[in-house]
Amino acid sequence: MIRFRLAELIADKAFRERRVVSLTEVAEATGIHRATLSKVANQPGANVGTEIIDRLCRYFVCQPGELLIYVDENALPRAE
Image (tube, rainbow, N blue to C red; front, side, top):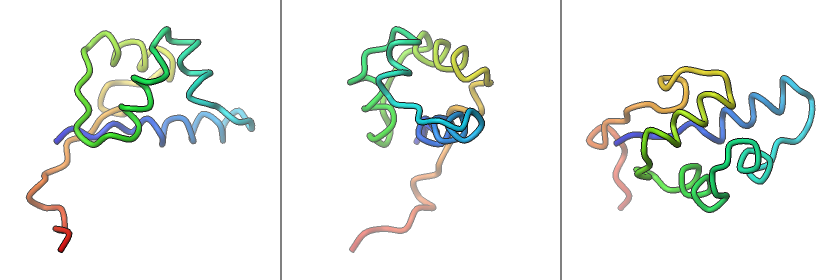
């Protein structure tokens, strides 16, 4: 499963700039709907196109590998 590191990148940006960075701010700066960003941040396995990835990489000045990572679902602990 692909996991987006959006929350972590927002936190890193907020820390570097010593201010609060909201999803609304990211939405306005990237042109990505806030609901889409919320889905990316909170929904495991969210499915978005490369244009969204491109916009987020441009905003955070990062490579796709810094925005998303692969998580082996079989290696995750199972809820009982």
